[in-house]
Amino acid sequence: MIQKSDMFKKIKSLFVVEGPAGEVVSNDEETLGSEAKANTSTRSEVSTSIISTNTTIGKGQPDQKFTDLLLKAIESNNMEGFDYLEYKNSLKSIEQVIPDESMRYKSAFEMAKTMGLTKEKLIQSATHYINVLVSEDKKFRDAVENQKTKQIQSRTDQIQALEKSISEKQQLIEKMTKEIEASKTQLDTFRNEINDAVVKIDLTNQQFVASYQLVQGQIQEDIDKIKSNL
Figure 1 (cartoon, rainbow, N blue to C red):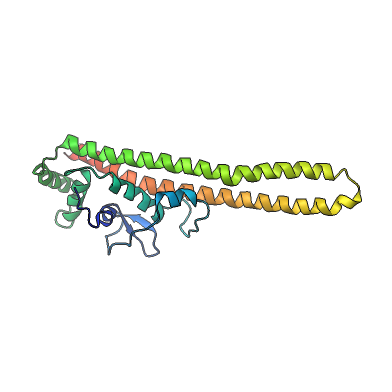
Figure 2 (figure 1 turned 90 degrees about the vertical axis):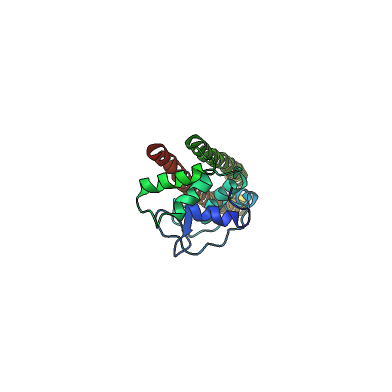
């Protein structure tokens, strides 16, 4: 398996590279430059501050913090021995020497066979990392639902209570007018908070999905190419 020292940076270099504005792009789209500094956000930080996180990433684009989160999960579940990650590393190391993709996959596999790797084990290990990503996807979606419950439902309940209060106060005499106006102002504030929360949650969710598709797509593409070229 990849050595534990700088393991995350090594795994990250196999899948993504940071663009000029810090955006995450595929290694297939850009030549890898210097290693990006590892994002220190933990899984718990992402799930507990999902809405408050500020970002300048475009809507639906891969986000570095989520890509790092997914790759750290792969790192934590790195299988023992020579597996898909080592094979992918071999592919990367010879891409300048062997431009032809089919030949590169075959050559990397010939080297991998000397380490005891078979085609079946290669696909099995790649599938293992797909399953790791599926697990992270479920954790993230659970966190999203939890945040919706905390930050939207509570505000929805408050809005319903205020609407009832406003309806009742409108039946009172003139002395209640100021209290009604104050409640309406608070109602507008809560509605604005819901709108902001929904936008932030949707954007965060789309960024995670894009990061998930970026990493999952590369692994799936490699599996397809392994099946067709080996």
